[in-house]
Image 1 (cartoon, helix red, strand yellow):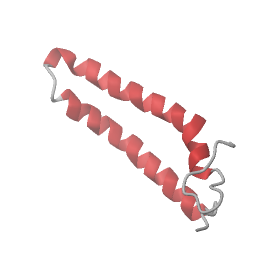
Image 2 (tube, helix red, strand yellow):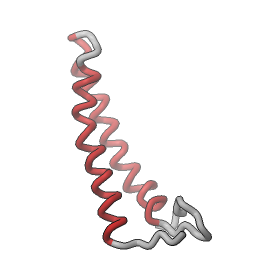
Image 3 (cartoon, one colour):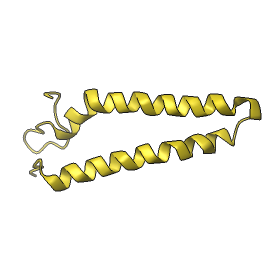
Image 4 (cartoon, helix red, strand yellow):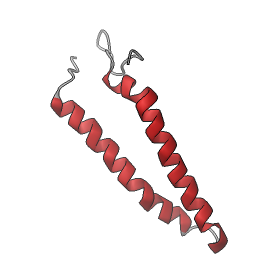
Length: 81
């Protein structure tokens, strides 16, 4: 299996990432509706804080795993980037 770094693969990963980031505020409001009224803001802030941490993790670690050299028939990349 050859997973080449081309525009189609890159676009798919970036669009998937954008859709997950777009979904996070909706999830925050969903969780906010499940808690008591005084805890809604705390729940919203936890979700947005998690979205920020995940963006940093993507840039620091997951980008390299997604686009690194997978080696002989591997699916996940290495941490070269």
